[in-house]
Amino acid sequence: MNKSNQSITGIAEIALRIHDLDLMRKFYEQVLGLEVLREIKNSDGTVIVVFYTVGAGNDHLALFEEKLIDWFTRDKSPRIDPKLTTLSHFALRIALDDFESEKKRIEQLGIEIVSSDTSRFYFFDPEGNLIEFNSHDESIR
Image 1: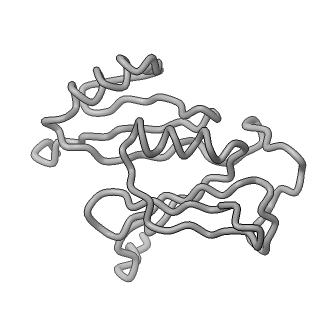
Image 2: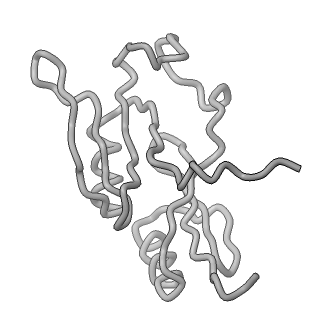
């Protein structure tokens, strides 16, 4: 049995390659309430990468516009096919006390909850990335 890597303390960043930066910014800022940490701009001044602060720690979500081609670009096709991506979903932690109100808020925005149980629910962003809101009760082991 392998020991866990004690040097790893968490996930620092999740990055999504996206088509429509304006639409996705609106969703992540207005629907999820994330705050912009920093932006990277093209030489012409247009924003191509947005980094968000997630939670109170040093966790980040990055939106990379698909036009950005660099060393980290794996798929050089003109459009991203969700069926070909390896991303299943990503989860954002929410307080257990906020579970029902957040679920209701997302539904009231016209966003379909595609799966739910007593501590987590799933929904899609405008480009089809599956998001989990997770409110795991630490007292239950």
